[in-house]
Image (tube, rainbow, N blue to C red; front, top):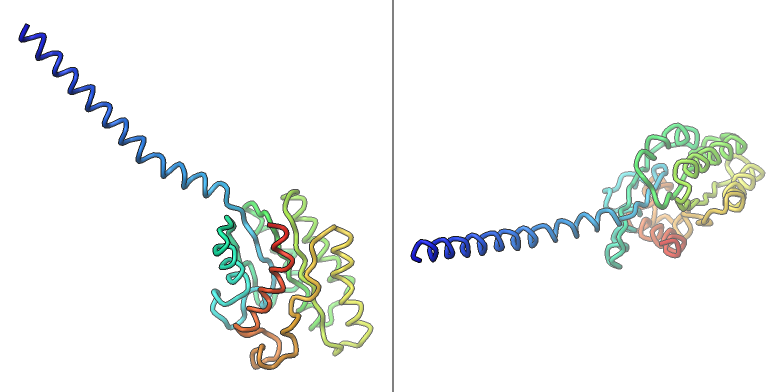
Length: 223
C-alpha cells in the first residue's frame, strides 16, 4: 500500500510539473505570434525621387517621407515608409535604378522625379518615356501596388514652350495609367525665400512640412 501511495504521489507531481511547463510555453509563445502577425500585416510605402525626397542638406528625419511616417504612426496605421530619394537623380538614372528598389514588396509607390530633367533642359519626350518605363516596371512587378505621381513645374528658363510642355507630362501620365496625382509637390514652397535653402531650390525643414501636407492630401485616401 505504501509503495502504491508513493507511486501515485510521484505521478501527480509529474503531472503538475508537465502542466506548468505547457502553460508557461503557451504564455511565452503568444506575444511572439502576435508580433509576427503584426510584422506580416505591415504595408510599405516607398518614396522614389531625387534630392527633394532625400531631404537635401537636412537630417533624414526632417524630410517629408519621415514626416509622413510620423502621421501614420500617430494614427496607428501599420505602414512602413522607405526613403529611396537620391540627390541628382534624373528620370533616366531613376529608370536604371528602380528594379533594385523593387526587390522587396511595395504597396504604395510615390514617384517624384523630373525636376533635374527640367533644369538640364532634357527633352520632354525623353522625360516622359523614362517616367512611363518606371511606372510600367512597378506595375509589372507588383500589379496591386498603388502609384502616386508627384507633379513638377519648372521656371521658364528654357523657354515658355518647354515649361508648358514639361508641366503637362504629369497629368497626362496620371490619366493614362490611372494614377493618383499630386498636382505640384512644391506648392506653397517654390519661390518662397524663407522656405528654401540658400540655393533657392531645395526646401528647408519648414518647407518639408508643407510638402508633407501636399503629399498627405493625395496619399491618405489610398491608405
